[in-house]
Length: 344
Image (tube, rainbow, N blue to C red; front, top):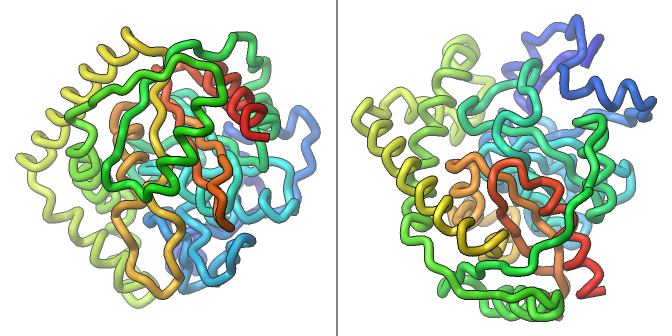
């Protein structure tokens, strides 16, 4: 943002950043619309993590339960819209960083098609997977967010009629029940599907992310090793050790998953999964890789996905993730509105 430094939740970067000389291109629509920008949000350090915990600048407080993680990496963005400090927020999503905090805070988030929103001026994590997307309290807010990110955007398509349900036997049964009930109320034809490569995608995504993390932030770690948290420093260094064979294997897995997803979208219009197979964990618990089980495969394929809260009968809502083919943001938003109406 012109005139302000970009810190990405990092002490090392904050101590070296200078004010930007121009806005990132993704801000152009908001500027042209006269949107009132009320603040910059905190996030997981260098956008690398699913908890949203930040040891340098404090952790945004989950408004549903302050003892639990707000989700990351775009934790501050989810909290800002959940607490009505903002109507719309932007987040970045490389492995789930828009959808995970949305699920943790009971809000809505849209991971856009890779390449749809320009990344110039956005601090990189893994550029081959990085995306920018809107976050809001509800789907109507996400529509506004897309209109600001992409002037002229409209939701001018109908919702789906046939949706594929990807089951997760390890998912919390309360979340499974909540999602099945929400889908049943939509009136869509819901069919069970299988995506054998889905379970392997998290590992492939992780290899790509840490390798590109090293390329993005290795120099920052070298310049200020005491200003990077130990956990993140370990992940950055792990990226240096990713071999060309590891990356080749990850890219092969990516191609297999993309081919399968193309076949799936020939049979159904959208795919339904949990955003998270677990409810938000406590702040003092170790980061659980289950947070990424249904979000990372989406980034690996580059397709868009929406996360919408649905009632679970408990203090935390479940979060339904709907995944569409590349460019299907409008249909996903139409579908999200149908889900909201069905469970309201």
